[in-house]
Image (cartoon, rainbow, N blue to C red; front, side, top):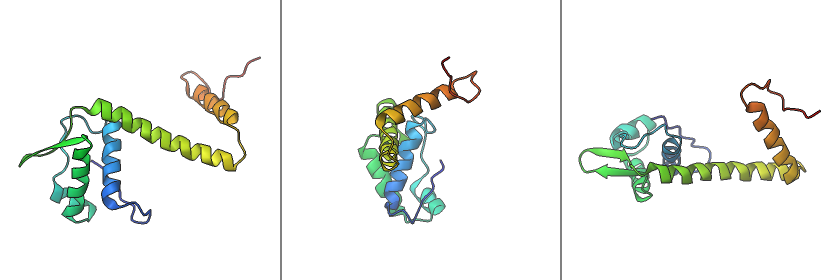
Length: 136
């Protein structure tokens, strides 16, 4: 499990851990039943206190993302699909919000953005040359 901390962005460390674990679960990189690193191990890897990991794991457990087996570790919950869908949607909505804010500052309309998204999607389709399909 790869977690990267950014000490300069102002987001609390435990929250960064929570967000990244949710992303790993939502993306399928962490599978249901898969064990997360033990608290002390992850704390040493990330160079944080064990209490930070305890807080992150507790929040993940409260959200239903993981469950803890006393003395056996912390595991990704089996109900991942519902959580994964909600988390994937949250990630995309966050990126859409950022895109729309930037588009507004650059004086693009919603229609311009929708058109560009469709063009970029068409360019990503298999068998295309990377250029949007042009109608003659």
